[in-house]
Amino acid sequence: MNNEKNKLLIYGATGYTGKIIAARVKKLNIEFEIAGREAYKTQKLAEELAVGYHIFDVDTEYAWEKALRDKTVLINAAGPFQFTAEQAMKACLKAGVHYLDISAELETYRLAQSLDSVAWEAGIQLISGAGLFVSYDALVVHLSKLVSEPKYLKVGFRHYGGFSKGSVLSSKNIADLGILIRKNGDIINNPDPKSKIFSFGKEEVECMPTPLGGIILSYKSTGIPNIEEYFSLNLPAIKLPDLTAENLPDGPTKEERAAGRNGISAELTGKDGRVVKAYVDAPSGYDLTPLSVVAVAHRILNGDFKVGYQSPGSAYGEDIIKDIPDTYLIDNNA
Ligand SMILES: NC(=O)c1ccc[n+]([C@@H]2O[C@H](COP(=O)([O-])OP(=O)(O)OC[C@H]3O[C@@H](n4cnc5c(N)ncnc54)[C@H](OP(=O)(O)O)[C@@H]3O)[C@@H](O)[C@H]2O)c1
Figure: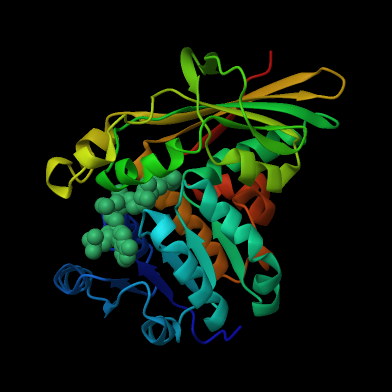
């Protein structure tokens, strides 16, 4: 990797989450440029941030080549990722640029997994799911070290702050997969989904069975063979024909985001039946994701990465949580 090209590119920077990511990168004085498919929005944002920009459709290979030429790492914030991840990953593989996205779509995790050997050859780190799942995965890695032979993992995710337009659009893609769990190492449909109460410090919250990223990402990080995931809000039940850009807000306001916190609570059972519990107390989702993905990008820019398909936990272990501001891992064992 050429050390002189120590720059970051954010694709999809004009989106609701992309803008918060760009603001965070700017705050940290990281050298970066932005890219997007829409000329006016991209140019306007670049002027506001005083950074260089590139305007191109996700399918335009030569434009990717040009935009990535002097970059070390890409943050792909353009979701739904089913339409952008493959093109962006392949462009990074070709350019020798590390790839991160903030996808919550299991299919893009599988795609990254399928590109493992090519990523090795290209010498790049490929992480799909470097948003909310960074602290989630750090929590699971932490617990996995507290028992011998971790067997059963249950994770409850308490989301605060509503949903962005982009998340609602992407959620259909996630909900359509059904309630998936990992059982004895395989991903299957949960035959008997039931709600479960999780403890977030002083608060007990009923969470509904929902497939999140851990069945792929935390499996990659720890190899725990049985993983069930729960969410404290149901996915928005909006049918696709009702979804238009006009009738959805971009996302929660800064004040709404600041008014509450996200929690991730996990329980892990070892082979001997011992149960360990811990939870993460973190800023609300649309603040947590930018803080997390930028923390990972920052590590990469400092030369800290593992080549190939990675999860946040397989690349950085539990330690990465210390890089995410205002985010705390708390053991919950009596
Ligand atoms: N798990 C997590 O950590 C987490 C957290 C937050 C968000 N997300 C995900 O991140 C994604 C973005 O969310 P958001 O709230 O920022 O949504 P958003 O406000 O709708 O922004 C989406 C951005 O992606 C661009 N885009 C969308 N489809 C594209 C395509 N086919 N080609 C090129 N650019 C495309 C949009 O460009 P235009 O303006 O030109 O349409 C826009 O810049 C969603 O998938 C969401 O689920 C995940």
